[in-house]
Amino acid sequence: MDDGTDEATPARLIDAKIEALGDWRGQTLARLRGLIREADPEVVEAVKWRKPSNMLGVPTWEHAGILCTGETYRDKVKLTFARGAALADPSGLFNAGLDGGTRRAIDIREGDSLDEAAFRALIRAAVALNTAPKPVRSKS
Image 1 (cartoon, one colour):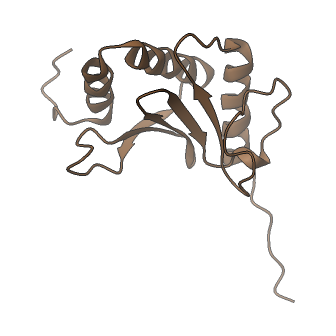
Image 2 (image 1 turned 45 degrees about the vertical axis):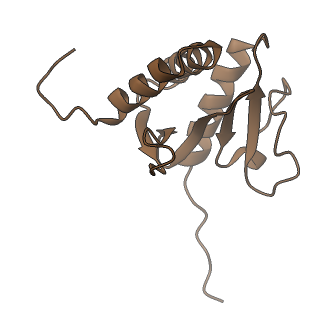
């Protein structure tokens, strides 16, 4: 859709990244993007960490802070949840970064299946965590 706005909008950069991949990784990233949008219609897409070696940057989905990032590697698509260690994961989707104190990730390799309902629930839980009232620190 050409609406006359800047071609380098985050959505267009993510579209370009998906198209540039041109393989199962692009298809997987596009599917995950759709699931994120379904789970949180108010999600904001951003692109971070653009540099000469990665001109299209890293797709990022935000709602009151980063929910997750979508990185692509030769052998996987990695969704890293910024506050994943604080999220319940009853379906066991997290399979990477499990020893980190803050982040957790889901690595998806070619041919892997994903429990889409559990993934949408994880996105909604990340939104709830980001939008929850922050505890007030006492000044004692």
